[in-house]
Image 1 (tube, rainbow, N blue to C red):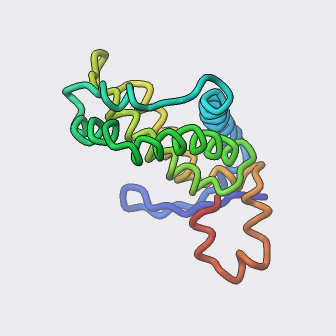
Image 2 (tube, rainbow, N blue to C red):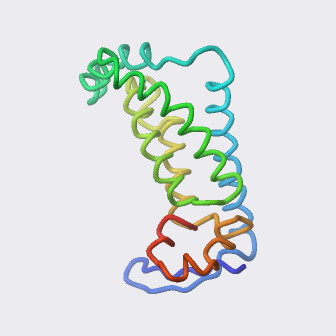
Length: 175
C-alpha cells in the first residue's frame, strides 16, 4: 500500500510517496532495527535475572535534571515496582509493535518517552550530549512521524478496517 504524505517544509507544501524507492526501504529497515533493539532489550529483562531499576534510578548522575525524581522513584516502593514491570514489558511490547508494524505511532510515542528517561538517566554526557540514547529517541521520532507501519506493516491493513474507518481518530495511533 502506498504511503503518501503531505508536508510543509520551509513554507512549501509537498506531496510525496515515501513507500516507493530507497526512502521506503530505509524507513522499514529503521522500524525493524529499532523494533528488534527494544524487543531484545525487553525480552532479555523478562527472561533473564530478576530486573530491578533501583540501582539505575538511585545512581542517576548529578548532571541529570531528573536526579531528584529518580532518587525519589528508587526510594518509593510502589513506583519502583511499577517501573520494574513497565520497563521490560514496555520495551517488549514497543519492540513487537514496531517489528510487525502495528500501532507504530503509539509504540513510537512510548518508545520516545522511555528514551527521554534513559537519556536523562544517563546524563553524565562524558562524550557530549549526543549519545546513543539521543539517537534512539530520534529513531522513534522518525518511525512515528513518518508512519512507518504503513509500509510492509500491519497498520496498512488495520487502517482499512471498518472500525477504524468509523473512528478516524484511531489513525493517530497507527501508521
